[in-house]
Image 1: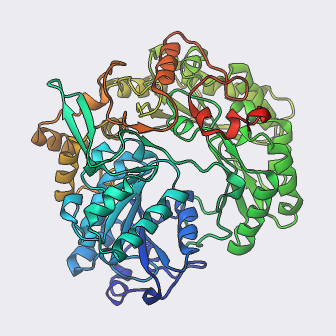
Image 2: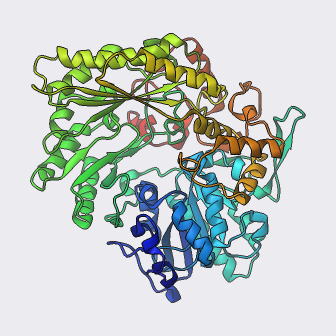
Image 3: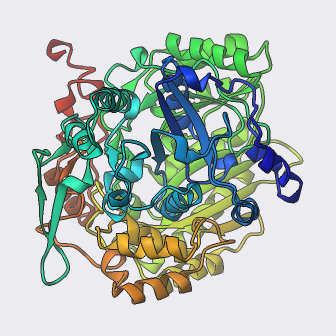
Length: 618
């Protein structure tokens, strides 16, 4: 429903379709007949948020219940925000047009540390107090989940409740508790104390933090019966888990404008820099029949002609070929293309290639992550140079001419020779194209080499490692550029300044709430976008607050240090992560979960890959 005051300014902004709602498959309810209203806020633009699978799942799940109305809220772009502030228009939900301040729950999904300022800016634009201590009534309960919730401390003073782990069950349990507490006339403080008893719920206001003289954390102390350790929630039976049979179809082109089908959660690989590979363990797969039926329903209900099979590593799905056979039975006839966005170098086979090229070919993307074999062993990538070249040869023989390769610089133990090998590997792919006898004739090869900067993340074996300083990262970027000799190779790299700030907040503690609060007052937003980001302004804030950001980004931590997230349990033990960190310095790899159990701790959930070959234990 378009607000009248919004309608008057739409012609003055870019992409007015971001702000009007009214899309196919949106959910409209009579607000007089619902008991609980949930504003699902994505702290980025409409195009980014509408591409997010987690939002699609929870939006449909919540709205299955007659008494819950979940609506979508996105961060308005700068031009729209300026006009909203100028005209006194509060941030509103797309479905009803009602201000966010009218909602019982205001939920944020935190996918990226640099979205923290957008979260606070959206609260401010809503007229909702930014600090949780200033929201005393039983409404506007601010909740947050997503991968950044695994270290909630930098935003602990702003959020009432963090959902740790997967949200399908725990979110609904908290909403049910809220309804009961409100009916019984309980206060917000009483509600939060009860919510903290639900597994997967972290209420930061119920924990006191004490610091050592050197700035490290001395202790986390729970109060009022809150648990000492918060354990993540896990959906154990993926075939039985809720999955939507339709998506809201956007009015403007979005980042991933296609049907998205989740095929499994978790990852068997254990790349030592990858947070997702550890926090989503163990791997739990859907069956091909369920995936096939869900894909067809999505295409029928949305009109999309492309299905993306979503996971952390699609070729690691144990039944990928039977699945593709089922999908191609109807996708070919209906001209629906299938994309596998997360292919591993060692998982691209002739069988997979022949299935995904039947409808439409696009470029292939692989992530070797490191140029030299030594570095790939350090990070436990478990990919050999010959495998990559064979994979590229297979693709070139199949008609592909475009390959994107993703790498990371600044990894632990990396040398300048390792960095130069990124360019060398790109050249090897170019050479492989011209050495492939049955390649596409009359066409040239295009290889894109992209390098992002390593950011040490919680719950990974590299969580103790320092990030390279910005000058060192710049030096490494320049070295790759200088090492590229072919015009067939395009080099892209991620801004080191934003990577630095990402590292600060990824491993930060509650002292950073002061910086973020000040950033909100000063109007900081869209820090993940070059248009708005200024490291110079951030450094001024840190100095004003008396905080050294290098303490969080560039400092090596000892194994004995109490980390800001040590009171949260994602199933992988700290002892295992330490062992993996030590193995990295020995250039030693660890087999993936299907080859051998490495004892990470995730077997305690009794599901997934940890148990699929042990029928006697199930």
